Structure formats: structure tokens, C-alpha cells
Amino acid sequence: MVELGYTPQPAADALPIYTDIKEQLESTYQGFIGENEGALDRLAALFDDDYTTRKMIQTFIVEEAGHKLWLEKHLGLIKDIGMENYLIEQIGQVND
Image (tube, rainbow, N blue to C red):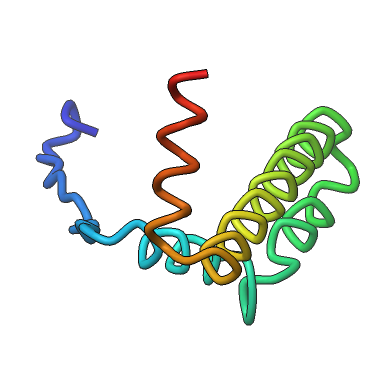
């Protein structure tokens, strides 16, 4: 494109900076629910005729499902034992 006389204008989206762990976990979890739920499955369906790409997307879907479960688990822990005890638990896991 540069050879055709176009000068790229790179831009980056501003990402939020979280100082609260619970807020960060909740924000990430929101990306998995609501209108976003099933978006990856819809994407994989677009590649019915491309086995390699569809398989790659399906592998990613499985990994993201695991991440969603991890988020649910940790948000549940915060709800059940409180933020202070959750942080103590996390520090203990690092030292183990």
C-alpha cells in the first residue's frame, strides 16, 4: 500500500486500566455473556468449507470456555469468601 502512495495511520484503542481485581474479572466476564455469547460459534460456522480454519477456531473456543469457567470460579470465590480472603488465598497459591 505504501508503494501505491498510501500512508498508514496506525491507531490503538485505549484499554481500561484496572486497579480493582474484581472489577477486572467482571469486565472480562462480560465479554463472554449477553450479545457476545455464541459469537465464536457463529464465527466457526462461517468456515464450514475451510476445515483448517474452522478447527483452529474450534480449538480457540474450547480454550475460551475454560477461561470463562475460570472467571466464574474466581468471581464465585470473591462472592463467597470476600475480597480480602480471596487475595490471601491467591498469595498462598503463589508461595506453594
